[in-house]
Image: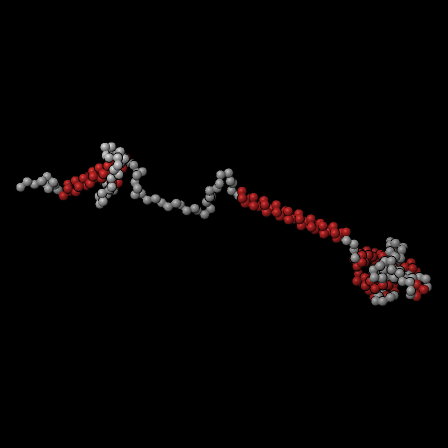
Length: 248
């Protein structure tokens, strides 16, 4: 009985032979599906279909790996893992549009806010100026005028040692004349005698002349002169204009 040549191979030789045959079959199959591999094949035949159950990963074959190791070619190694994209580290600069400088938008925003703030401030100042102008044009009230005259009179009284508070002087002025420096009484006893009471604090001419203070106009209807002379008289007769609560 003859023993075939393949039966005389050892188990290792058989495995090697099967592996080489499989590799050769894959190579032939790959060459067959490549474009132009069979120029004499009918034009209307479609590409050859892969044989189910016989696909082999050539890249994993020992001969292919040995060839890559020898040449250093790893470009076609599809088994190599790909790392995920590196996440952006905090504080790392981001990409910016061409021609754009960091902080441009921030600078523009700040510029806009500054311009708006300046415009608002100018508008506020304009309104304030208008109000100040209207206030300057508006005439003073009688009470405001009286306050000014008393203030000026008291500065003179202080130098002369004449007592009298702002409140005490103003209450008597408003009761006697209503704050009118031209007021004159033409019906009381003094008027009947020919010396009517005049001015803010309704003094008669003889009293004004006697208690007039130098440095003030010698005119009975002058507001400041009338206040100073009347307070000088009240200090002499009542101790202070603050003590006068009725006609004096």
